[in-house]
Length: 433
Image 1 (cartoon, rainbow, N blue to C red):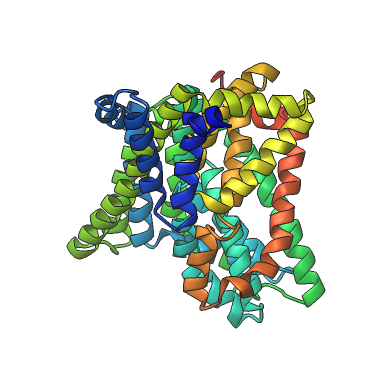
Image 2 (cartoon, rainbow, N blue to C red; image 1 turned 45 degrees about the vertical axis):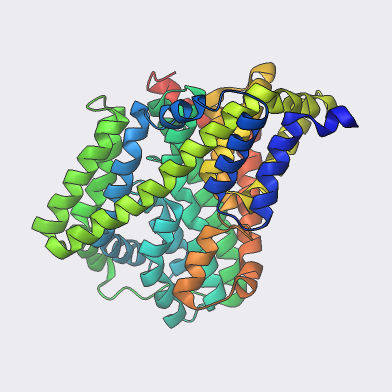
C-alpha cells in the first residue's frame, strides 16, 4: 500500500482528475498535474518548457489556425445561407425534408470548417428557426442540427484529424481521404433516424416555390459556395497542394467570395474574424501544449504502459477490446474536449493498435467518431450548449430527442468497425497509404 501511495503513475491520474472534477479548465488540470509530478519525482522540471513548445512547433499544426480562419471567413461571407437555400429547394416537401436538409448542410459545412461548435453556430441560427416555423418541434430541430454538426470533424478537412496525425505520425492526406466515406455513412444513418421520427410526427419539408426551376436558381446562387469544398478537397487529393497549403488557399478563396462576390465582409467584419480566430486558435494550442506535457509525463512514469496492460488483461479478443475502447472514449467524451481526449488516450491506445494490427488510419476515423459523439454527451457537450444558446432550450429539454440520433451514430460506428474497407478504400485508391 505504501508503494502504491508513492507511485507517480497513480498521482499523475489523481492530480489530473481531481481539478477536472472541480470544474477547473482542462488545460490547467493537465499542466498542473504535469508540473507537480515532474517536480516531486525529479523528472527534470527544466524540460517542461522545451516540451511545452515542442508540442506546438510542428508543421501540420500550422493548418489548424488556417482552417479556423477559413471557417470564420466562410461564416461571415454567409456561404452557409446559400447552401441552406439550395438544399432546402433540393429536398422539397419530402417527409422530414428540413431535417434531412439540415444533415445535408452539416455534411457540406464539414467540408468547409473543421469545428463542430462553429458548424452548429453557422447553420443553427438559420435552420433551427426555419424548422420551427415549418412545424417541427424545437427540441427535435435543435437536436438534428447539434448532432449532425459533429460530422464537421469527420468530413475532411478536420482539425481533429490533423491533431491525430501529429500524435500518431500518419499522413494527414491519408486520414483526410479516409474520413470522406465514413462521414457520408454516418450522415445516412442520421437521415434514416430523422426520417423515421419525422414520419411518426408528420414533419415535412417546404413546398418548392418555382418547382425544379427553383432548384436551378438556388444552385446558381450557391455556385461560389458549392465550389469551396471542390477547391479545398480537389486540390489536396489532386496533388496540387498539401493540407496545410489547402487551408491557406481556403482563406484566400473565402475572402474573395466574401468581399467580391457576396460583399458581406468589410474591414469591421475582417477585424472580428481575426479576433475570433485568435481566440479559438489560442484555446486549441494551449490545450495541445499542456496535453502534450501530460502525455510525456504519463509515458515517463508508466501510466501508458500500465493502462495498456490493464486493458489487455481484460480480454485478448480484438472486438471485445474495441468495445471497451469505445466505452472508455464515450465516458471520456463526457468529461474532456476532443483535443484533450486525443492527447490523453491515444498514447495509451497506440500500443494496443500495434498489438492487434489495426490500421492507424482506420483507427483514427473510429476514434474521431467517438470524439464527435463526445460533443453531444453531457456534461461536456459543446454542440448541445451552442444549440441551447441558439434555441433557448435547456440541456434537459434537448437530451431526449438527441438519444435516437446518438444511437444512429453508434450504429454507424459499429457498421464501419465491421467493414473497415469502407474507410480505407479511398486513401488506397488515391495511393496515400
